[in-house]
Length: 308
Image (cartoon, rainbow, N blue to C red):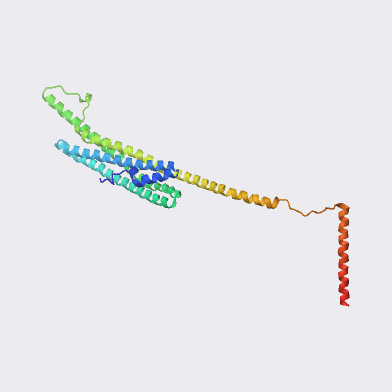
């Protein structure tokens, strides 16, 4: 394993840069979600590495088992079980590495766009939801591995019991032949070499598979949580932007209303005049009408004289 392949997501420069940008833009919840998702993926990889170590140890133990006819027949079956587990682990490891690469490429794309376009580009962290399908596939693979391992553990336990009882029967046969009392092995806890060589590693691998399933459940939930937090933050941010825009235009609106009020409601400045009411006003209007009528007659008379 080279250094790059063995590097954890949480230590990747692009992931650290993305987390820094999220925190800088007051998106701490989203930063925490991204960090935890990366931590879960790192945890999956560590568990697979532990499984591979257990299986390698199991393989070596099988090779070192004492050679005899019964054991040789058992070694073949046990080796096949070990190879099945090893193949499954390799498949899961390959799937996890694909998830790592997708997380890194998505993070890089988001960081590059955020540098160019700003905060709104960071909402793209919801795109990490795309790895959900891969995680679901891994979980199905892990669940299948647990079932297969349970069967192999049961078969190995039965095989171990057979070897142990066969050995106890043979030992008592020799005791009987030597005129010695038989031993009640049911009162004694004895472990066959297969228990240590195969059964113990199998149980350890199964425990790691179960732990992986829990990690996968948590990471899938965290992805859903990230998508929800991004949506909530986006709605809140847009609402804040709208509020700020309203606050910025409010002074302008107030000024316009003030000017309008001055134009509409300011008292008109009129020239001084005397107002006449009731009969006086009527008499004055009558005088004006008489004057206008006289003027009209004068104009008509002038026109007639000219016509003559």
